[in-house]
Image (tube, rainbow over all chains, first blue to last red; front, side):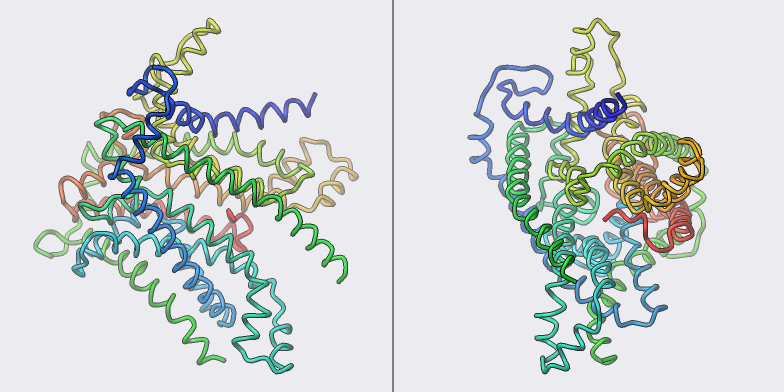
Length: 265
Length: 272
């Protein structure tokens, strides 16, 4: 009885979280152009999507910005974690405090603060300013996922590698890096997702003529969203879902291997 | 080691000064000066004008209600998830992050379709012979949009904090004769405070400052403080006034940061 209630509760929350997603998927097959009524099943928005250069260009920008900003943020963030690990406690606390600012601050404040920076220093608004802003809000996600891994690291292992004749670089690459990798990967994934889903900061730091999917959708709201958008987001969502399901299988094996290793120690 | 260390910390230190510290100083500079560059408190005092004060009051009210609703919905859920034996930690996080792969604006817009007068929900209600709901373009729809968008940010810190509680502590309480109610209020709830504080700040700040949810679900008549600031920047181009109002908003954010620093020293309630 109690278990049934729990299951129903979880199911209701998931219905709440995923109902809009299901709605968008259904709308992508709706022959009628308005959201309000169902005009029969069609694939035409999917074929029109391929011909819609505007949307494809916005998609290209979105993916390129997400990829570049998350890669750069991962590099800067990981290097920062290595540096912070050896810092004095007080310096480290200050650095982590600064790292938390973009996380805790409101997106609108981060957005306008960057906009004012770019205006004051004469940056040309466009792809570059969006990229710089995305790197800025992505770095904290990387640091916050790598730092816990860093703290778990046993410093003696790195020193042992040095004692055994490894150069600092190869000791890092072959001893420290593999231990950090799960944190680095999840930070990267988090950063990529946040960049992809961002609207507010992009809204304030983009220039005329450059659009990501988010800003394009926002300008389309008043005119009515093109159904091709629904088709595109359905494709993206399903692609990610498939990727995750495929990835879930090897992950289970990893978990088992981890346990075995833990048992050996 | 130390010299190499300085070299390693340089990129991020430089980055955070240029793109975090200086931009924040710019807000204060613009907020505290007028168009001629002279010092003034006018932009901050502008919050007291009837229109701005109304927007701020409404923002505070709606964000408090949504934060409370998120908490009430998320706490039982986080408890159920934390007690599940699967303990596929990353899988549970994934389920809540997955919706973010569908654009946040589209997901919020989908609620329009669901909530409309002849929308999906009302059709289902009519079919079940239940009274219809008409909340689209009202503050209720904005609250729903806030709860929908920010619920994951409440669930994840709560789930993290709750799953870290040592089961032996709970068993000990039971052995010592505490019933369920006592165990909850004297053991589980106090131990989950870091998660609660972090969840509240993760929901309250974006809800307080949103302008997207209100413009998508609230029609064009309901102005939140975020909408006012957005208009000052993107339409009126009055950066001084917009910055002044942002400084007022930042007071709330800073209060929030202090609360998380005091209650969650070790970052136990973190989202990741």
